Image (cartoon, rainbow over all chains, first blue to last red; front, side):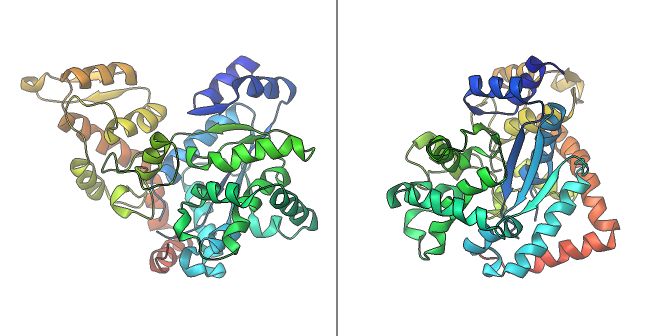
Length: 44
Length: 319
């Protein structure tokens, strides 16, 4: 998958991206960049 | 219990990220829930609840071979991790830490324990200990991520990119700002989100179709109003992400059946009044039921999963 397609996929989920230029550069340099999200386990 | 943002929306976004070649780490923040006094601050209960979280994602169809799970308590077992926490804490003013409290869903007046000040420092250290190039959390977590962007280069680590996803709106629509953020717009968005701690705002993945129907039909959805309308919010962010089209089957006297292949055209019709809230709601019920059904059934049929859910239901409600 080319950088542009990958960028579009990520842009499509990002309501705010800081910054898009840096994201593009990251995708150009890394095929598998690491992303994370954290979750506090709680009941309600 | 898992709600739509957690059980449906989050896994959908991860699927797209995996497609883009991203290595995704789901970080089970047990120590953070402990600090934040979730589940009565009982770490054992919190860990069990974390196991339930993993079960929900599994049932939601998340690729368990590709997604990586990391527990905060495991990360915190390394000396290097705590060195990072110290470095972050040494480079963060108390004032700045106070401003980062939104990430805990807390306001300044609620700060009672010193442990709560560990929270932002640990969250920033996590990013670098996890090796995260991208912080892909909800918009309400941006404060910690922005702090990480400032401190990363200063501490000779790196500057993570922030990709914040949308926060789904609660069923009741727009709420008064509760004072989470100095930016009014952001404050309102956080105060209005679908939040597990406010059950009235939520559709849970375990809700029956009948419960979903009741909730959706009672939800805020004034005709012709497209701004801050939770039903349109779910239509845009969940339904059109999961389905290519949306068929509205209505009697000829109300305009007859109509099919939408994009959110934009549906929104236009809603704004002009050509699409009535009741017709939209009927279809939203069907499609949300279709999306939650596999999870609901997994927890009904699988004994181990059912026990996990029973445990979480019984666990003390503390916030």
